[in-house]
Length: 154
Image (cartoon, rainbow, N blue to C red; front, top):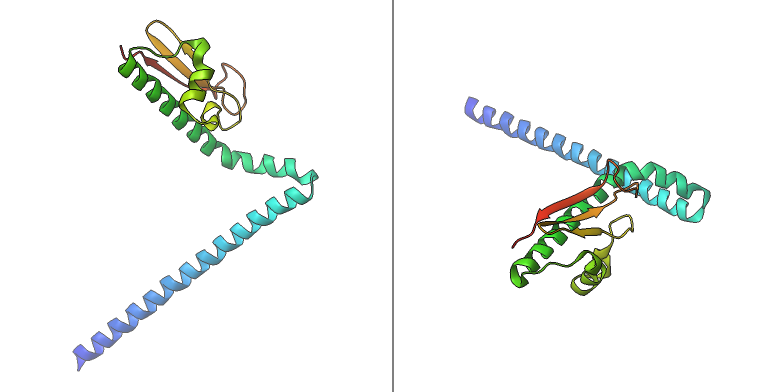
């Protein structure tokens, strides 16, 4: 009898605990839905009311910029791997003045510019090369510049 009662209490505890988890998940989903709706409403109002566009951009950029920096860094590393691959296969890397044409030949137009819409810069030296993005502020030699400097593969 006590075993049956203990099993019944255990089953009741599990059901109560499971329903508590479900309730918490429902609350989290409701909060996430509200957040998504507020985000959509914000963008719609920014499109409809031109005066609110700059305010919305100023509010969202601190959230978006880390992703853009990560994306630009990944693109720069991919470009550097492509230059090195060409160097290993053909024993030649693009000259500095050939960079824009090399990008257009080997990548889509999206790859030729960073997430802020500015072209990636490239510089080749006798022993290495550098690919750089001027970062969110767009100014050369500032703290937020992203760059990869790599030795030539040959």
